[in-house]
Amino acid sequence: MAVELPDNVVVTKLDELASWCRKNSLWPMPFATACCGIELMATGASRHDLARFGAEVMRFSPRQCDLMIVAGRVVMKMLPVLQRIWQQMHEPKWCISMGACASTGGVFDTYCVVQGIDRFIPVDMYVPGCPPRPEQLIQSIIDLQDMIQREGTISGQEFETSERNRPKRALLELPMYGEFRNPQSAISH
Amino acid sequence: MPATPQTLDALKARFGELPTSEFRGDTRVVVGKERLLELMGFLKSAGFDLLVDVTCVDYLNYRGATDRFGLVYLLANTITSERLTVRCYVNESGLRVPSLVPLWSGANWLEREVYDMFGVAFDGHPDLRRILLPEEFTAFPLRKDYPLQGRGERHNFPVLLRSQA
Image 1 (cartoon, helix red, strand yellow):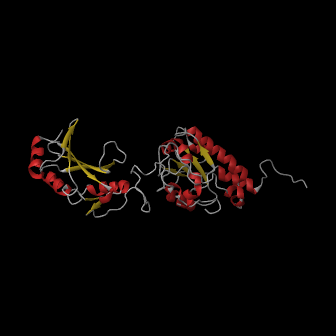
Image 2 (spheres, chains in turn red, green):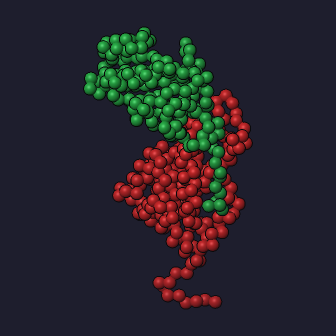
Image 3 (tube, chains in turn green, yellow):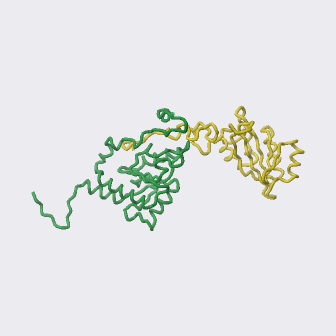
């Protein structure tokens, strides 16, 4: 059954329209704990201008945000704060792990630095670098926008798939020099 | 500026012969923990009005060391810019030293940090809690027998999944 449409009418799926709206108005929550935060500020400032991608409205209240950018190392005292802020954000929400420290602990392989936030909260994009250039962060936001357009739904069903629920990395401690630690004991300690 | 001979003479007259040394313009006096508070009170009344820092060194496996921990008190006289380092050695059997908070209020957080990192208890401290690490932390991480990467404390957290948040 053909329907005559005027030229100024576009037909799309509601899903794709919702995803398109979401991806072009990301509201970042800057969780900036270290020098990556400076690059994050530069990304939001006029020279690199995150506003071109609709993500310039940084809010310091997690209730108003849908994109958490973890910029910097997270220590064990900060991790419960990070988890609480993540839980306070509304669905749909995404997380960018910015820089080497947030993604892996970086050079700070010490007793108090969490070796990658993806052990404890879900992460969608990793940005390498120490710290990453603003261009790299912008590229990760562009990639995230592609991802949102690809997999977003209006019912939020995508968050219940087993793929999304899987922890990004096994909770394995890195081997210490000279001895291997049992991963189970590291978790239950 | 190193401690003047007058200061050292006054110390000698009051406390007898204390091990004293000078290295690159810094004078160091070693005192037992029994006389630490008395000596610090004396130095404060003698003009050393500023407690610059309180810190600690772990001498485990250190060449030639006889005691486990060495407390370091850095004092300064803000009028004459005279400086003096007071050392006090303690061992694991008696890890208690008198607190200097009655003399300098600024010792409060400095001593809490030493307690946090080395486990040295300060008698008479008004609020001896951990200052940097979480309250539930049980180890003292700057001790030499504590592994650099910890004992799994950094990964002892619940894992949040996508569906839980």
